[in-house]
Image 1: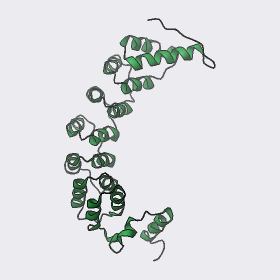
Image 2: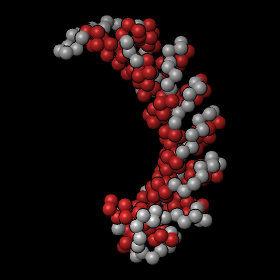
Image 3: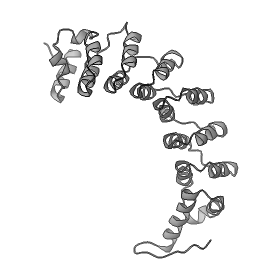
Image 4: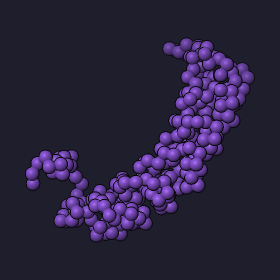
Length: 249
């Protein structure tokens, strides 16, 4: 293949050539270009991590495998698994989990939770991707995947009350998840004001009515209009001061 290099304004021939070589394998995934890049990497001062990330984002599993087998992959592959999951390249996610010691962050799990792919979440957990954070629960709840929510709460042992997950499910109209959360947290005084506002704005009246009869202690004496009124920054600061006994009421 003939590679033409032109000197552009304010661009050295070296920089132009480097950029051209970098982009070809990223876009097409040709091993021949990868061999050239890895052998000339020091000369052209390219960042191996950025190169590898680009192959990940374009779904070139054959190139990723080549780089791994020839020891050209850097140790910073946590972001790589996250990027592969976000881009929808499940085969690359599986390859990284099987062949690399690094693992993804909660972003990887959140992607599969958002799409309700519980089988892959279980598989990743069994292969060392054990990050179950509130973000993962939020993704499942907001996307309406009750089976994933149940798994995270019952088997993955995500503990605590995560109001963003409740608010997200109320906003998106997932009534079954809203009821599941409130039943799960029945022994705790969960504030539903934000969830009520989210359901109201989105027009989910059934969820709004349900939340209204499951109010927390702090909202029991307030009218519905007051609860549904959006808090200003000043009002939020005032409420916080009252809660922390910084001012008297």
